[in-house]
Image (cartoon, rainbow, N blue to C red):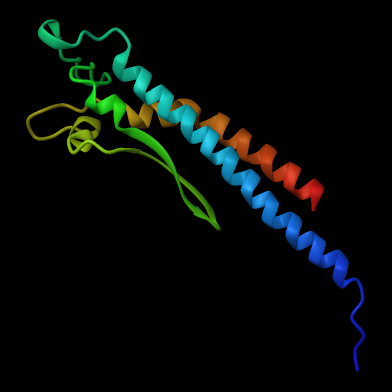
Length: 136
C-alpha cells in the first residue's frame, strides 16, 4: 500500500491558488475599468450636448449628445475560471458607431480605449500572477 505524505502542504497550496484566481480577476476588473473610463472620456471630451450638438468626424469617437452611450458602458466579471472580464457598451447603436454602416463611417470608441490600455492590462495581470505564484 502506498503512503501519501505532505497532503496538508498540497491542500494549502490549492487554497492559495483559489485566492490567487480572485487576485487575477480583480486585476482584470481594474484594467477593464480603465478601458471603460477611457471610452467614456473619449465620448464626452469636448462634446456639446443638446441644441448645439455637433456630430464627430469620421474616425473620431462619437461626440456626446444624449449621454446614453457613455452612461451605458460597463465592466463585468463573466467568469472566475478562467478569469474573464468584459467591457461592454449596451446601447443598440454602439456597434454601428464603432464599426460604421453602409451610410455612416465608423466612429470608434471601444477599440481605441482597449488599444490605449493594452500594455497596462498585461502588466496588471502579470503582476497578479507573479504574486499568486510567489504565495503558492
